[in-house]
Figure 1 (cartoon, rainbow, N blue to C red):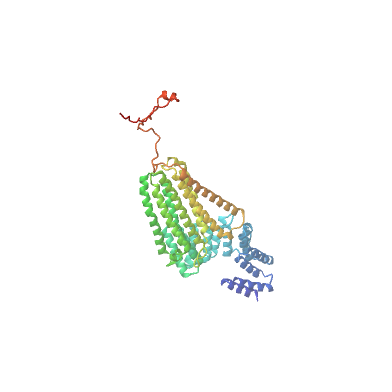
Figure 2: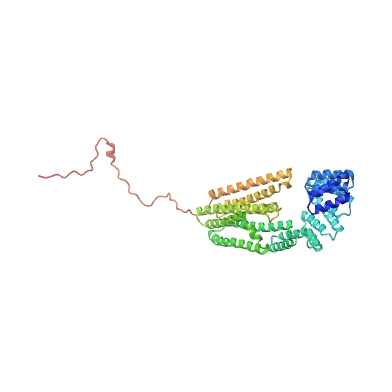
Length: 508
């Protein structure tokens, strides 16, 4: 088979997903032309697509020995070295490929990717390479898509949005660009309008391409993150109430507790109502009725009841009820953590109709970042001021609540990381990340333990349920017992006078 015919047949087989068939075609042609650089580069590309990076370097190296000026071989070698975390050699081969092919947009995009990824990033060179690529192919939607990804890695959202808009103006049905637009809309400050626009974009994308995994993955993320907010509402309610219960008088808590009691179901209702309107018909029901989701939602609902009962008890003026309320409040938070963990694992282990998720680590990591950056410093400030609080022991409930939330999110981040462990290599940075997560888990567990002890043994101001007997002298005077005369006590051998009445005498 001629080389050109083999290359064309292999390309068609690759496009329809028959990778092994393409490899077999190229391998057969290589038997007749073992030093042909084009066949070797094509085989190296297939090995790279199958994540066989050592074979990629071996085949591309043979191509370079046959033709040192093969820009395709340098391009593939750069990609393989980047996957093996050898970024210096990757950038060296990338610049060689750009020098050999200065007017190729794909090579310019390769340089943009190399300089916007890995250690020692160079944002200026990445931006220059992206601008050069779009100048070479201004009417190519795929080029704008790659440029938008580069600017997204550089955290330059305005530039990424400009390229997304430009690419969609060229090709309104581009799957990658539509997915980036939906994610950008979803990330607009968590505003409901942005979320609704994102879901509308995804529904339109799935209507045109029902098998698009990126769109299905993002739609599943929208759904599960909305359900996770149900448990987060319980956490927020408990944490805010514990913080307020330290300072506010009982009469104010009697007004606040019913308001928050009704606010929680209303927030849940709003979440489900909006999801039913936004998601495709039957999407929400099909996923909520799964056994794990049912158990999780039941646990969250029961936890909400416990938190409400704890709040009612904590507004009392009796010391015992305040301590009991703090314990019940923390138990409710633990139940919500169990439900949150179940919902997260349901997201990470999708059903047959859902694609595999890829954003669990980012979700948990962002939540931990917000807690550590904003919530934990506030708790530390409250720790210094709790001596002036109305109920200092309630600070233990606040610490335990924050500890439970952080520990839950750390466990979820560990689950997501273990699930994607193939993307992590055994290196010092990975070991440091694991050690930091374990240390934070230990600290969070210690905070929960300390907080529970503070609830039980800390200072609580109020009245006792049962009045304790006082030790003051009674006002009632007690009559002293009669004592024997001293003279009688000094003569022990003398019989004591009889106290019996003598029998009556009979007169004759």
